[in-house]
Length: 111
Length: 113
Image 1 (cartoon, rainbow over the protein chains, first blue to last red):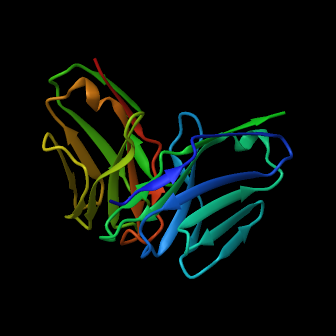
Image 2 (tube, rainbow over the protein chains, first blue to last red; image 1 turned 90 degrees about the vertical axis):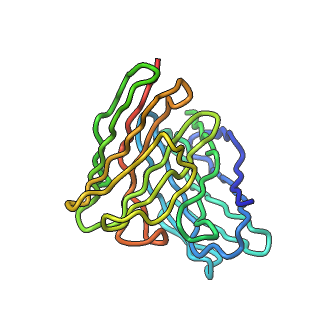
């Protein structure tokens, strides 16, 4: 069935780069998304990538898409303590009716 | 601020009770989505409404129902509540379909005792 998988935890030092990885199953997904959830808050859309792109850069964020391996990654440059949050990868389901989310990667940034 | 509002922020109730969660979408958005976030299941899609009509159903229990009103706000009704229904319930809205960016509200935390 449709599934999105992410590693559960990532710990980095302030100033380092963070790379959060995600694998998905539906090769027909048109868009893939990254959302951020801070403690006690809702999901905030960080960025998205269209399936015909390999890379998208937006300030400190770089999204890489490898369609052959169905692998998506989010790189955060110069990670700050304020980046500590849970990051969710999501794809559109095959029916085109809903987003399927991974379980989320908790990013912990230490100073 | 995503522009999506949800009320109440917190809700504590007992097993067997019924509650209603409310969501107002962003101005101009016609679609509303409901999601449930729990520790064991993660973030699960429940149901989508578009311009007042149900458009898609996900893992929504029969004890749960939703509707979207002419002013486009939506309500999620949860009845015969069980301990396992304790979760964060998010509403999201988008302009039209699921490939349009979904903007999430802050969520309603439901605790069933």
